[in-house]
Image (tube, rainbow over the protein chains, first blue to last red):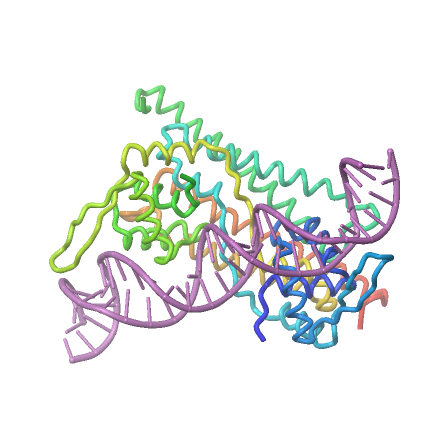
Length: 186
Length: 186
DNA sequence: GACGTCATGTAATCGGTTACATGATTAA
DNA sequence: TTAATCATGTAACCGATTACATGACGTC
């Protein structure tokens, strides 16, 4: 029984506490979304697969006329979660379109790279700000390892923004100096 | 005519110089692969679509008995490339399984987070080393904006490795002190 | 009554990978 | 002659997103 990473995310979420599919989706949207998103179209079918594999069990806990299924880890599910956490991570493909634009930015003329770096910087500043909005002291705020991941996200986005800024400044500097000695592009 | 990002990558590659599908694949494997991969199963069909949209043209340039189609940008293709580079970037979803493990690492016991951070650190050290292997002074080595992207990759992976190391050290410290006063987990 | 939220689900589609097939050329 | 590389392609599959449908509850 091979699990998808999204399946493991669900196990991880249920490791915090029993939840419905809807609650998992909300939780993901407020936390892992920044480094691992999930949609209903993944979550509900995956919950069924996990239940079929006896890694989780769902109990009907309707609220009034609203049906609701709360899922919780089985002992086997908790073992699977621990096994995944202990196993070497094999998926590492990244997709960063803004870096792609930096890579190709020579095709956009002499100011291309500086523009691409500034756009990338703006994006990461925005993400860092949004991550900072996640109150670290309110009730329901991240603690323990989720907090570590949050702090990582903030540090990472700050770093990227700063790197882009410095690099852009440097490129603007060399651009100016080549302009001064008459070597700049038209 | 909406292009996929992989389609733009192909345009970007052909912006450097005319190439065959095979050469594009090799180029990608040595460069953008770290932040945007592409397989033959994407490249060849995409080349056809781009040719059908008149953004690139292919000319038969067989070498001996080996057939070969070299593609180059049309003026419209170059315009599309520049338009993409100038447009705001809309795709920003990241997938980082090793960070996911940090996020959930409380479920792996008291040493979980430290272990997850160390695993993440090891991975990024490895990537940084591989990026450094890309010789910056040999012929065919990255220059201009590709070099900027390479230096970004190195700086980024160095930063992540260092952050993980410091965080792990700090956590080990607090873990020890709680152990000393008798508050550690079994 | 309308809107927002709780709650569950599915069908169509998409972007992408994997695995395979074919065949020529070159170097060991 | 064998292996590596050049070169092009496709079919099956997979994970994931999008868009839609359904319906109950709370509140303005």
